[in-house]
Length: 200
Image 1 (spheres, helix red, strand yellow):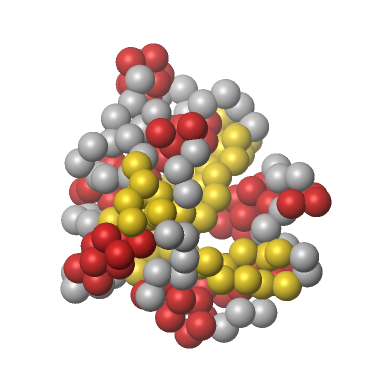
Image 2 (cartoon, one colour):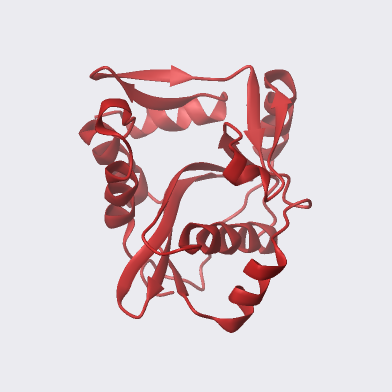
C-alpha cells in the first residue's frame, strides 16, 4: 500500500500514481489537464436536468463503492486502479484527504467520482456512470462545491473529449506547478465542520 505521506507528497509536487503492469508508477504530464473553476459550463440539456432534480447527490457516503465502480468500468488489461490503489485511497479517505461524490437514483448508486482534496486544490482521479449523465451530475456537484468553498485548482490530469465540453484545458507543467504552489497557500475544507462523513 502507498503510504498517506507518500501520496500527499506526490500531490503537493504535481505527481499522481497509477497502477501499470503490476506496479505503481508516478506521473506528472508535460501538458496537464485542468478545469478552470470560473470557466466551467454545462449544456442547456444538462442544466435543465439538474434543475429537475432527477438524481440525488451525496458526499463521502460510499467512497469504497465509488472507487470499486471506477475500477470495474475500465478494460482489465489497461486498468490503472488495482487493489493497491484501492487500499491506498481508502486509507487516504479515512485520513480525511480523499473524497467521493455519489449520484443516486432512488437507492441505487448510478454514478460518482473520487479525488483528493489538499488545501486549495482538488485532484480528480476517476468517475463512472451506470445511468446516462450520472457522472456529469457528479462533476457539476463537485465544481459547485469547490467554488463555494474557495478552491483554486481542479486538476483532471489529462483532457478528454468528455471533459472538454465542461471547459477543461491543457496547460504546461510549469504553469500547473505555479497554480499548484498558489493553491497550497489556501486552506480549504472539502467537508466543513458543519458536515459529517456520510451526513450529506
